[in-house]
Length: 354
Image 1 (cartoon, helix red, strand yellow):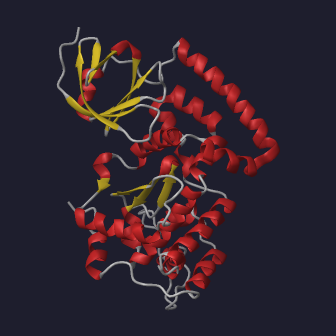
Image 2 (image 1 turned 30 degrees about the vertical axis):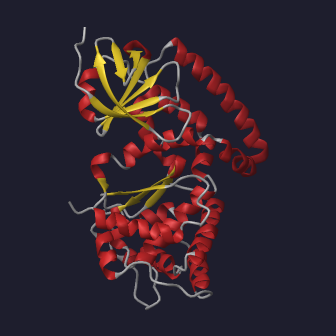
């Protein structure tokens, strides 16, 4: 029998709205107390990671409660999320039937059907998936949020976001990693790795990459990946726990050429509307791909790979010559204005400084 635990601050996602609630929670014996509400411990499942503990309800699969890592010791006896119960088998059986139906539709209608289905995924469902994958790519202890750097990043985002907003709310997280990349997860989660900021020479280069990721958001490419691989995901996530999650992260690391072109189309429009030079992203792709930039100097991609992930962006975002030329040609058609001052650019570069 467990005694009363410490009181923890938690985020509660009710499965109906996208915004989380914030509650104080504590374990009292076989009951979890959430504000004025009480839930039997036996009706919960747990998922643990280095950054925290997530509890799920058996009766409401979209509901989840996110606790700090120090709360894990009070919930060790809660069944792990991937443990198989009769309820899970029933859920998987229904999911398999749904996957089969989707597979038939995709077989006959392909990418056109994906494009039509992707916006129908409820935002809170997509956001929940994105949040779970973000625990892998962007654990809380690796997130960078120095105040001045965050303000500079917000200024860039403000310049390239459309006036009417994107199709879903976007959250950009900078991660302290040498990987030279940026990825878009379902639910509008964009992960920007510090290595990309380090290798960028101007704010316009960062803006161009972010505008491209915004293009993926606009076309729900993360949701399309979910639908395309949902059958595989059910078994990887349901049977393999965290191992399954790690095994399926590749779903959001690459897109087909059609998706990349769609994202580029939107990036060009966003940069033009924000009066941000598209030459930045053209130069960045050229430098990462080992070609020559405007000044004729060879790109850093020609150097021996030192293991810092310098080629990651090119491998997951094809940097072919035609794409670079499209951005360069677009840049010549309008007058651009600088985004950041020198001081703001230095602050962005130092966003991961403690």
